Image (tube, rainbow, N blue to C red; front, side, top):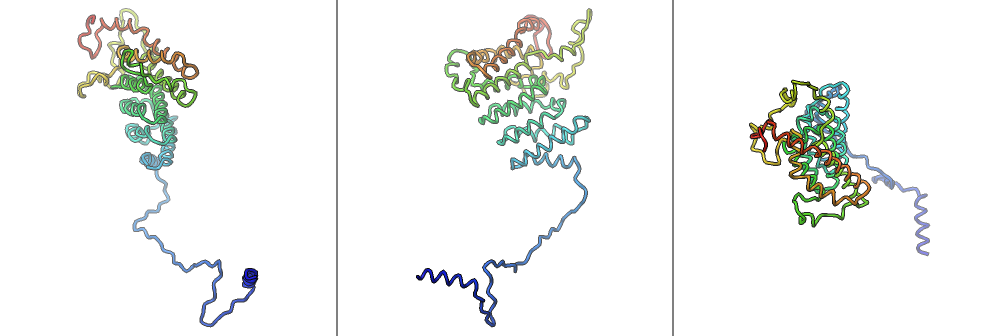
Length: 358
């Protein structure tokens, strides 16, 4: 009964007229909103208001600085803007708002970025850069490529494989000819596969066979890395078709005239290392294909052949990648014995004591 009477009393409150008393404020409704606050304004001492938009050069520089932002989406959007701006200059051959020598030091550290979207957008940006301007910076590019290939994160290694393919297609000849480009990148690729650089049966007793041919992401990553290695080996050991077409066809008595002509390279005497530090064996500048073949036969041919032998029963993408790498090695080294014999009797630039047989 008490509960029922209380409910009836509560319902009557909605229909009762409030009693107004002198000297007391009128009661406020339940949905009352207090609007007695006062607004405050922010005063700026220095403020510039202009109707002119920033120039394209200033906007380009602004987005270059934003490429190092702490926000993943900001870095990705900045790289997207830079890609669009650079691509717009390609049809007209107009100069870039900023040279490649300024862009690459800002962009290459993003090779190890934790965001997949940033790395994918970085690859799109690198593909629109002029190849002639990129060729002068292959030394720095190879450094970041090796850092990405040997990274612990699998997604960063996969993205670096795409960057290496871009570098091979864009500036492949310069990449394998720069200081340490051929030896160090090949060594990093072999180590990434889990193949041993040491010779002997003991070095291959602990080879990792659990990831070979796995029908998941590991199998795709293995096939991708093998295909990338094959493209890199092909760039270093094979004779480029355009180089064969550019060689003039001199007749007798003008034989081997191209050997005495002025070099087309910007740093044709770089192999002498006149002003640089003493180079080690891995930091050699191997501009000649025969030199790369000699180093490959001495250090890398045996480990790669043993690694391919471990993959001979694999099928699918891994099997096709193995065949591609096998053909790249076989075709690149098939004329090595004849060329090495000829080089033994020819004076070669930058070498001492090569006027006769070794």
